Image (cartoon, rainbow, N blue to C red; front, side, top):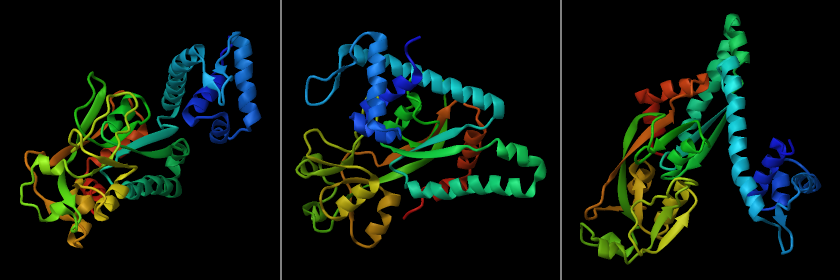
Amino acid sequence: MKLTLDALNVLDAIDQSGSFAAAAENLYRVPSAISYTMQKLEQDLGTPIFDRSGHRAVLTPAGKTLLKEGRRLLLAAHELEDQVKRIATGWETELRIAMDALIPANNLLSLVAEFYDEHTLAKTNDPAAQSVVQNNGTQLRLQQEVLGGTWDALVSNRADLVIGATGDAPAGAGYSHFSLSECTMVFVVSPGHPLATAEEPIGSADILKYRAVAIADSSRHLPPRSSGLLTGQEVLTVPDMASKLEAHIQGLGIGYLPLYWAQAAIDARQLVVKSVEATPNRAIQQIAWRSDNQGKALKWFVEKLRQPTVQKRLLSCH
């Protein structure tokens, strides 16, 4: 067989990174090794994968097909590898946790510390459990997603566990989930904004006159969603919730924030809460994972996340 998983992985890295040099950096290789791998692949397949006639190399039609189908092979290979290791030890080699931007990522770190500490204590104080602990070695990877991106991360296998997913679960069976909380959303403006003194409830026609602040949906495969935006409204798009909060405080735009994100700024009179017409003010957040995933690390986090004290800590104000 002329195709190798390594060559497909390099091709995927080039596309994701945007250049041969960036792919080399992400894969911890020298650029010449990346170029050689692609040239060897083109020779083996007898067809160009990249069109190098322009300023930068771009995928040929054959290259695009190879990338698309190659990603399916890479996904299948990763899933097979993980499945074999889970069967052998019961512990995942890596647990990928995607958190919705509504939840402060720092709020999960105490649970991460508990996960590490619990196994460290078991290894130190319980000699009989040492073999179990040594087989753990689960690497944790935390990532942030926005709106439909949490479900998308689960569907496309970018994540094993999602925290704070909103909206309906994707069609089809195979997912387990339970409610985390109802997130109260508040419409806020800075004290100096024209809408700070507007008569309430504020109508959509008045809101449309002013710029909104939003975080872009991080979905890659599922249709992207938006929340709290009006058709035709000017939008300032920011990378995360902390930036969104600060943009509201600085008067760069208006819009909705989770109450537990905005509460401190409201108390400090940096933001003013306004009532608006005919808009929902709550979002149901969920914990979700693939039903067929029986990994021990996943089970540990799911059991902890069912506890009211852990949920309260996740949604605490900063």
